[in-house]
Length: 205
Image (cartoon, rainbow, N blue to C red; front, side, top):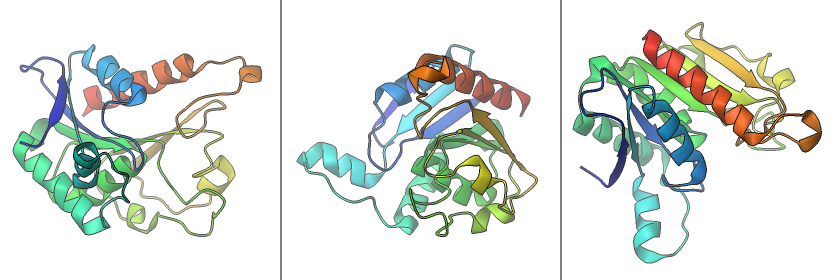
Protein backbone atom coordinates (compact mmCIF):
# COMPACT_ATOMS: atom_id res chain seq x y z
CA UNK A 1 0.00 0.00 0.00
CA UNK A 2 1.17 3.54 -0.74
CA UNK A 3 2.09 5.79 2.17
CA UNK A 4 -1.08 6.56 4.12
CA UNK A 5 -2.26 8.15 7.35
CA UNK A 6 -4.98 6.28 9.22
CA UNK A 7 -7.29 7.54 11.94
CA UNK A 8 -9.97 5.51 13.67
CA UNK A 9 -10.43 1.88 14.72
CA UNK A 10 -9.57 -1.10 12.52
CA UNK A 11 -12.95 -2.55 13.43
CA UNK A 12 -14.89 0.49 12.22
CA UNK A 13 -18.11 -0.40 10.37
CA UNK A 14 -17.26 2.01 7.53
CA UNK A 15 -14.17 3.65 6.12
CA UNK A 16 -13.57 6.97 4.39
CA UNK A 17 -10.79 7.11 1.77
CA UNK A 18 -9.80 10.78 1.81
CA UNK A 19 -7.66 12.45 -0.90
CA UNK A 20 -5.92 15.83 -0.78
CA UNK A 21 -6.38 18.85 -3.03
CA UNK A 22 -4.14 19.96 -5.89
CA UNK A 23 -1.71 22.13 -3.97
CA UNK A 24 -1.27 20.63 -0.53
CA UNK A 25 -0.48 17.16 0.89
CA UNK A 26 -2.44 14.78 3.08
CA UNK A 27 -1.10 16.09 6.39
CA UNK A 28 -2.24 19.73 6.25
CA UNK A 29 -4.16 21.10 9.26
CA UNK A 30 -7.39 20.98 7.22
CA UNK A 31 -6.96 17.32 6.26
CA UNK A 32 -5.86 16.39 9.78
CA UNK A 33 -8.79 18.16 11.44
CA UNK A 34 -11.35 16.51 9.17
CA UNK A 35 -9.76 13.07 9.55
CA UNK A 36 -9.67 13.36 13.33
CA UNK A 37 -13.20 14.73 13.51
CA UNK A 38 -14.73 12.01 11.34
CA UNK A 39 -12.78 9.20 13.02
CA UNK A 40 -13.90 10.44 16.45
CA UNK A 41 -17.38 9.28 15.46
CA UNK A 42 -16.18 5.71 15.03
CA UNK A 43 -15.30 5.62 11.34
CA UNK A 44 -11.91 4.80 9.87
CA UNK A 45 -10.33 7.57 7.79
CA UNK A 46 -7.52 6.73 5.38
CA UNK A 47 -5.59 9.61 3.86
CA UNK A 48 -3.32 9.05 0.86
CA UNK A 49 -1.36 11.03 -1.70
CA UNK A 50 -1.36 10.99 -5.48
CA UNK A 51 1.94 10.13 -7.23
CA UNK A 52 2.91 13.76 -7.96
CA UNK A 53 2.58 14.69 -4.29
CA UNK A 54 4.71 11.72 -3.29
CA UNK A 55 7.34 12.91 -5.77
CA UNK A 56 7.22 16.37 -4.19
CA UNK A 57 7.99 14.86 -0.81
CA UNK A 58 10.91 12.90 -2.19
CA UNK A 59 12.45 15.67 -4.31
CA UNK A 60 11.49 18.74 -2.33
CA UNK A 61 10.46 20.34 -5.62
CA UNK A 62 7.00 21.45 -6.65
CA UNK A 63 5.42 19.96 -9.71
CA UNK A 64 2.07 20.06 -11.43
CA UNK A 65 -0.58 17.49 -10.56
CA UNK A 66 -0.56 14.29 -12.57
CA UNK A 67 -2.78 14.08 -15.67
CA UNK A 68 -6.38 13.15 -14.93
CA UNK A 69 -6.05 9.50 -16.07
CA UNK A 70 -3.13 9.03 -13.67
CA UNK A 71 -5.08 10.55 -10.79
CA UNK A 72 -8.06 8.30 -11.53
CA UNK A 73 -5.86 5.22 -11.79
CA UNK A 74 -4.22 6.08 -8.48
CA UNK A 75 -7.61 6.43 -6.79
CA UNK A 76 -8.79 3.10 -8.20
CA UNK A 77 -5.61 1.43 -6.96
CA UNK A 78 -6.12 2.81 -3.47
CA UNK A 79 -9.72 1.58 -3.45
CA UNK A 80 -8.49 -1.88 -4.42
CA UNK A 81 -5.82 -1.84 -1.70
CA UNK A 82 -8.18 -0.64 1.01
CA UNK A 83 -10.90 -3.09 -0.04
CA UNK A 84 -14.33 -3.33 1.52
CA UNK A 85 -16.16 -1.42 -1.18
CA UNK A 86 -19.49 -2.30 0.42
CA UNK A 87 -18.45 -0.31 3.49
CA UNK A 88 -16.30 2.37 1.80
CA UNK A 89 -17.00 6.05 1.16
CA UNK A 90 -14.46 7.95 -0.93
CA UNK A 91 -13.79 11.63 -1.39
CA UNK A 92 -11.44 14.47 -0.83
CA UNK A 93 -10.59 18.12 -0.61
CA UNK A 94 -11.18 20.05 -3.86
CA UNK A 95 -9.37 18.13 -6.64
CA UNK A 96 -9.34 14.96 -4.54
CA UNK A 97 -13.12 15.10 -4.29
CA UNK A 98 -13.47 15.78 -7.99
CA UNK A 99 -11.42 12.70 -8.90
CA UNK A 100 -13.48 10.67 -6.43
CA UNK A 101 -16.66 11.62 -8.29
CA UNK A 102 -15.04 10.44 -11.52
CA UNK A 103 -14.26 6.93 -10.25
CA UNK A 104 -17.13 6.31 -7.83
CA UNK A 105 -19.64 4.69 -10.17
CA UNK A 106 -17.13 2.24 -11.62
CA UNK A 107 -15.74 1.49 -8.16
CA UNK A 108 -19.19 0.70 -6.73
CA UNK A 109 -18.52 2.42 -3.41
CA UNK A 110 -21.13 3.53 -0.87
CA UNK A 111 -20.80 7.24 -1.46
CA UNK A 112 -18.66 10.28 -2.20
CA UNK A 113 -17.77 13.30 -0.05
CA UNK A 114 -16.39 16.47 -1.64
CA UNK A 115 -15.09 19.25 0.58
CA UNK A 116 -14.96 22.38 -1.57
CA UNK A 117 -15.71 21.08 -5.08
CA UNK A 118 -13.79 22.87 -7.89
CA UNK A 119 -16.80 23.59 -10.10
CA UNK A 120 -14.63 25.89 -12.25
CA UNK A 121 -11.26 27.68 -12.02
CA UNK A 122 -11.46 30.92 -10.01
CA UNK A 123 -12.56 33.82 -12.18
CA UNK A 124 -13.52 31.49 -15.05
CA UNK A 125 -17.12 30.41 -14.39
CA UNK A 126 -17.62 29.36 -18.01
CA UNK A 127 -14.99 26.61 -17.70
CA UNK A 128 -17.14 24.23 -15.69
CA UNK A 129 -16.00 20.84 -14.43
CA UNK A 130 -19.48 19.43 -14.06
CA UNK A 131 -20.23 17.38 -17.18
CA UNK A 132 -19.71 14.05 -15.46
CA UNK A 133 -21.78 15.16 -12.47
CA UNK A 134 -24.92 15.19 -14.59
CA UNK A 135 -25.05 11.38 -14.70
CA UNK A 136 -23.37 10.48 -11.41
CA UNK A 137 -25.23 7.58 -9.75
CA UNK A 138 -23.32 7.25 -6.47
CA UNK A 139 -24.81 9.21 -3.53
CA UNK A 140 -22.64 12.31 -3.16
CA UNK A 141 -22.30 15.05 -0.55
CA UNK A 142 -20.67 18.32 -1.57
CA UNK A 143 -19.86 20.69 1.32
CA UNK A 144 -19.10 24.12 -0.10
CA UNK A 145 -18.48 27.63 1.20
CA UNK A 146 -20.79 30.41 0.05
CA UNK A 147 -17.74 32.55 -0.85
CA UNK A 148 -15.83 29.79 -2.62
CA UNK A 149 -14.30 31.28 -5.78
CA UNK A 150 -14.43 27.82 -7.38
CA UNK A 151 -18.23 28.05 -7.49
CA UNK A 152 -20.52 30.69 -5.99
CA UNK A 153 -24.12 29.76 -5.12
CA UNK A 154 -25.56 31.82 -7.96
CA UNK A 155 -23.42 29.88 -10.44
CA UNK A 156 -23.87 26.44 -8.94
CA UNK A 157 -27.65 26.70 -8.82
CA UNK A 158 -27.69 26.97 -12.62
CA UNK A 159 -25.81 23.70 -13.17
CA UNK A 160 -27.53 20.53 -14.26
CA UNK A 161 -26.48 18.05 -11.58
CA UNK A 162 -27.49 14.48 -10.82
CA UNK A 163 -30.20 13.97 -8.22
CA UNK A 164 -27.69 11.76 -6.40
CA UNK A 165 -25.79 14.93 -5.42
CA UNK A 166 -26.59 16.95 -2.30
CA UNK A 167 -24.93 20.31 -1.72
CA UNK A 168 -24.62 21.80 1.75
CA UNK A 169 -23.48 25.41 2.06
CA UNK A 170 -21.26 26.80 4.81
CA UNK A 171 -21.97 30.43 5.64
CA UNK A 172 -19.33 32.86 4.36
CA UNK A 173 -16.79 30.07 3.85
CA UNK A 174 -14.06 30.28 1.23
CA UNK A 175 -12.51 27.28 -0.54
CA UNK A 176 -11.15 26.06 2.81
CA UNK A 177 -14.36 27.08 4.63
CA UNK A 178 -12.72 30.10 6.30
CA UNK A 179 -15.21 32.95 6.86
CA UNK A 180 -14.56 36.67 7.27
CA UNK A 181 -14.38 38.03 10.81
CA UNK A 182 -17.37 40.26 10.20
CA UNK A 183 -19.52 37.22 9.47
CA UNK A 184 -19.61 36.34 13.15
CA UNK A 185 -18.44 32.82 12.35
CA UNK A 186 -15.02 31.24 12.67
CA UNK A 187 -13.09 28.71 10.63
CA UNK A 188 -13.53 26.26 13.50
CA UNK A 189 -17.32 26.76 13.36
CA UNK A 190 -17.44 25.90 9.68
CA UNK A 191 -15.10 22.93 10.06
CA UNK A 192 -17.24 21.53 12.86
CA UNK A 193 -20.32 21.94 10.67
CA UNK A 194 -18.57 20.25 7.75
CA UNK A 195 -17.41 17.32 9.87
CA UNK A 196 -20.92 16.85 11.27
CA UNK A 197 -22.33 16.73 7.73
CA UNK A 198 -19.72 14.18 6.65
CA UNK A 199 -20.34 11.99 9.71
CA UNK A 200 -24.11 12.03 9.13
CA UNK A 201 -23.64 11.23 5.44
CA UNK A 202 -21.32 8.28 6.05
CA UNK A 203 -23.53 6.98 8.83
CA UNK A 204 -26.59 7.04 6.59
CA UNK A 205 -25.02 4.97 3.84
